[in-house]
Image (cartoon, rainbow, N blue to C red; front, side, top):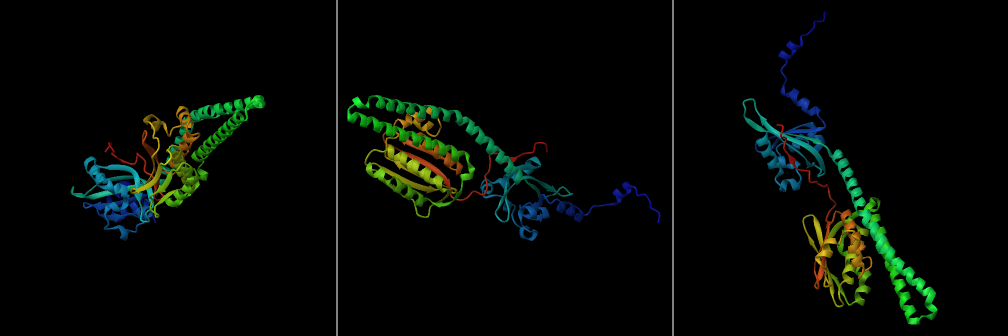
Length: 398
């Protein structure tokens, strides 16, 4: 049979793509979710790529509202509505944000939505196209976190070295000087004077060791992710452990320790870090509370976090001290250590632990009346984190 050469122009003229043809093209794009919604924002078509990405079969999602793919935060902020309004105004709307799948898992995706116009110019609804960028987003976030930690470490390096040099070396020089004086003169000194100087050397040595422990622990936890193991924790169990540990110190100073936290209050945190957080703050409160005072621990629940308050009836502090309390500044820490060796470093340790646990810390204080330290912890394990860039972006080239 003779092969006749086919004119491509004739073939193009004769061939009219069908709806099925276009549907096959869309379904072949497995890395993309492509679906349409009507003017009432109800899903009325669903590609196989959408099923792969979201987990919904076509018959499960047809007839469902457009909202089903958005996170609770986006729904509260009217993101679906804003997205449609932008598409109508600009011709299209693009975004980079988290979406929610059938199994409640979340994924990060680039999205595009634009109006669907019929052949007669009638507005039919909207087309939504998404591409899953979760792996790329996670890689970018990991790199950003690593860079931030390096910058943080570099920023604090000089301050910490100054602390080591000033707040460790200077007292050690004093200890050495006192020991040398005793060595050379103890035979001619009064026994009570020798005793006083030996007690001073002993207390100073213990203080320096405590401060060194604080520094080592702070650095180890702040920059070593392998020891971080958060889980659901009953807050009262850890409050009670700390109270038992510090009970003797509080009793000697006739300070009353008590909490008003419900037994079922739980947080998502690393247990070892939580013990250190509570113990450092309560211990700090004991040391700055006059005899007969009271330290009260309470907790309030927000939508996602527990806010813990440690309130004392102590001496309070100035605004200048409060502003620098959680920063590794040599002068501030040196001033703090005049009353409490290691307290400044202890609060740095607390801040580092809380940051690891996605928490925050701040203080409110009135001089002469007392202080309240507040810190937050998550109630549940976070499913995802949304950065400041996760907003609708308009495509100005449309």
